[in-house]
Length: 99
Image (cartoon, rainbow, N blue to C red; front, side, top):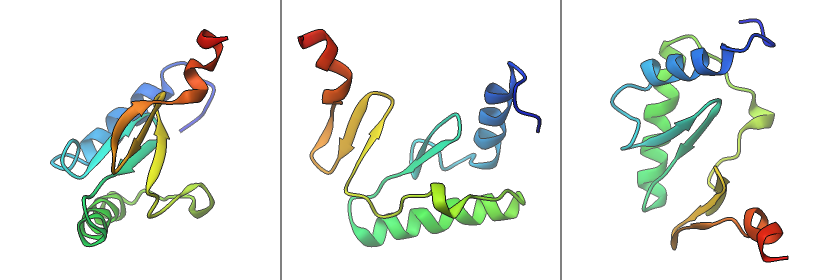
């Protein structure tokens, strides 16, 4: 898909939503080219990761290993920090407002 066209991100996100039907909201969160896989335990996370990867593989899509981060306890996503403690505003995003 050629990048630089204004509708490419939205088109790609629709493709991801189609490929990951049944998993979004339960096993993963999707925004543009980011997929966040969540689990309460390592085993649950691993199971959901396997389900997501199988759907991606069956759609013949590819991932860039150097852009993948696996088994993180905390991630920044859309201006929030998501962790086992819950969701909070990313301190970097509110630093300018505080100053």
